[in-house]
Length: 425
Image 1: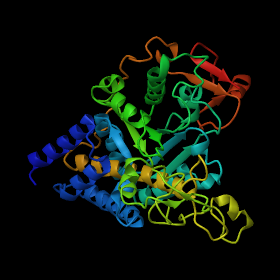
Image 2: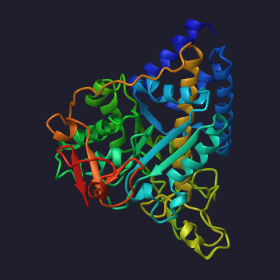
Image 3: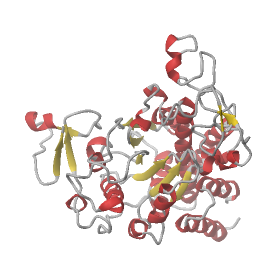
Image 4: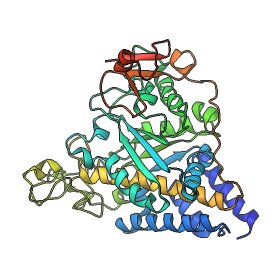
């Protein structure tokens, strides 16, 4: 493949993402990487091989079923100059500088891992998988699970510096069972679209200029939220038109399109998640696709406790040696969390693949470009969208760089109360 043809293929791939085509992001990246011209940079080639190996290992765990892992429904073109470029530069970086990749997971009880053990929740799965995959590059991985069960999206959606941290490279937002503007009474943001932009804007304003992903579960298959977000972030969408070209924003669907191929072939009558009765329908959280809830496994790689531990009954299995669950109730089980953690890992690895492909065609050390925020479009009338908000919390969790009310008492951070500082107890 010639240089011009390769560049054209890369441009076409980015354009497909911008148009929101139905082709999955990961599938497009995988096809491009398989067929692209091999770059002449040895450092890039070595990195690409390591990413290939890590991706192949993850795919093999699901019998090379790429669809179940490819949860990225839509990604803005801004990924190319943001997360793609940032990861690729980090992978080939030489010298003694510390290399670290930080993910912040925000949300409620789903992400916090309720009805299970915290170290089996999807952020912990992501931590384990990415730490192994990025180890060959000398990259330290830190996944911060900042979710709190029962917490509304606001005011936490405004507290990016305190919760995600000023060094976050990727922010993943969940809040499956809440409205986007829930809790925004003290700081009105202008309805649902304003709330979405307020979250995006406060995340993108972090010094590290992270990518932002909205995670939807979609256990029932089709949903209204996921396509609505994809449309809003699309090239013609209110937020996508303003932010999309230069900023990385995407939408993940854990159990929607990723499981549609299984829905199309599963038995009409199946066994309810508790194993005690039969069930029908498209909701694979309540009525799994089969004896192996994710289509491939009846046990996760990490159950959280030993099989003979009395606490195994809290690990979401039907009986001591029963099947681990995709869903416990409205919360995912260990199998469900494992799927979501692996899906997020696949997004990162696919992004790294694409970033290395672009870097291999360049003589630059990095293609990362930090762009200024555009003027607010959906939350323009809200003061919280005029400049970044800093929050002082009176409770955990918080990022290492976060401030709390105690900082005002002790004064080590030098933070003073002001119009842009909100205090929450």
